[in-house]
Image 1 (cartoon, one colour):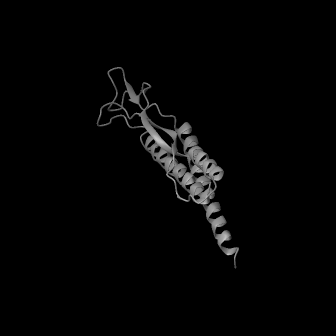
Image 2 (cartoon, one colour):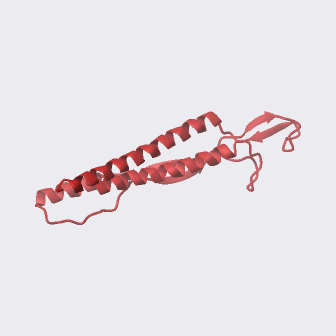
Image 3 (cartoon, helix red, strand yellow):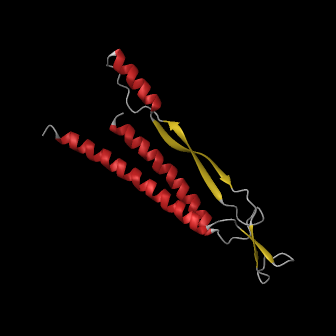
Length: 153
């Protein structure tokens, strides 16, 4: 694996974590949304990731047969990450007794999104740290490239 592939893998992870952070932000922003255009309270959304094959960065083939087959196998194993799907939570809404609320039913209960703010914030911290780890990996690869360029000076 060369440094450009390492940067590409890190970038794919950062992109996936950005999607996750956007969804978590939307969930937190709608923690008290009782009415949506589709009807009913807001439904929490979650993202699922999957490994993805990365495009080949270089096309060098002036190598021995052994080395070429080894690198072909290595490249098949090198994976990135991508968003496979975004799903809505199917759990029933939280029912909170608040007869003064304009969206309360005849028994005085309001249907609120089934979102746990603490759990969403923990996931946001996790996604932020994963994103930062990707940035650190890309910066390390850039530093290695720069140092390699200065070897001949």
